[in-house]
Image (cartoon, rainbow, N blue to C red; front, side, top):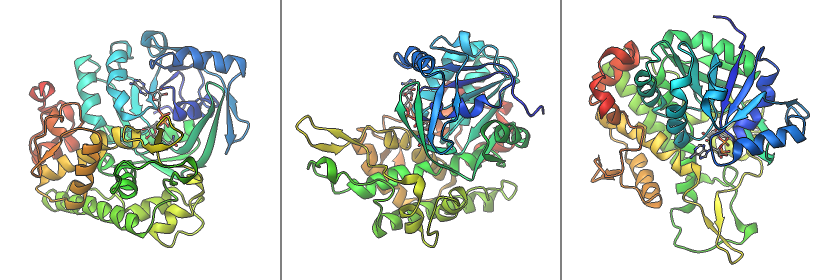
Length: 413
Ligand code: NAI
């Protein structure tokens, strides 16, 4: 595979999209375009970058600046020439973006999400198949390489921390090493190949950390308000109880991987790491004291100052924001997908169920009923059952042998 990118399209207009533009700009030989379909972001981003003569990084990579060649909310104007399309947006925005752009994609495009969260592979495979893009390579990154926050729209973004390495999986799975090499060059961070998409979905750490900490912080919430200076820190606010909860969620996912591997020894899932090990390897340079899971959070510089998502009440106080992406993204496109895979595998996940019970109540969504995934709000989620996968055998077959095999009927589920 050629390890330089000629034309790159970045899709999204939030923190991550702002960060990737100046970083990737250095390594793209041709045009770097941006597809920003949300509200008036395309215009704001283009105007901001024009006034500032590029999007500028502050914090890490201070001063690095890069300008997109074109920004548009009309997909055919910005994705049609791209050899690589990189979606950098919360998972709940993936499907619409992909549906809008699919007809205009090059036949053999490399299309991926950074991060993919869980179940991206089912959704992307279906949409590309329907658009007859049968030669596309789909890739899924395990997370965003940076912790970053916008400082000025279209102009400045602060990079708080950078991960040491990030995994990428692909369909076909054999494409992962080449895609990883390309992304490493593009992003200036080590991107390593994962064995397959199932590993990526289960190794999605956001599904543990975001719903888990929200549950830990607010499980006893009963409507009280917070003064601004009492808003808890999110990652640095974890205590022994929350860390124990996160550990147990991570253990349940590892138990699930063991059960799948026991039944299907060919399906290697060693890319799915215990939470502490993942934090230690991903944030090696940012964690002052890596001795315990608690200190991996509380001494991690990349998490400095990040607060729990809250919304103002209008009277000078704040309440937890249960519509934040920590839940809207990481439950239906994260933890719930893992729970659905556990159901296919016949593995029980009592702690994950406890977290899902509270978080889905906060989201006003019905997913689990009497311990079964039969709730009325499952349709917009990315559980494999929504894509015609109804057994572990089928899931493994798709994972190891490719999508086109047998799920034509599943496309309509
Ligand atoms: P963000 O919070 O900045 O996302 C908001 C953006 O998403 C909007 O500005 C818009 O461009 C897009 N969007 C929202 N709703 C949309 C809709 N209905 N249709 C189309 N676009 C829509 O997200 P951010 O921070 O850029 O994160 C991107 C991904 O990276 C997410 O999956 C996030 O969980 C993940 N991530 C972010 C980190 C960070 O520090 N920013 C760290 C680790 C992961």
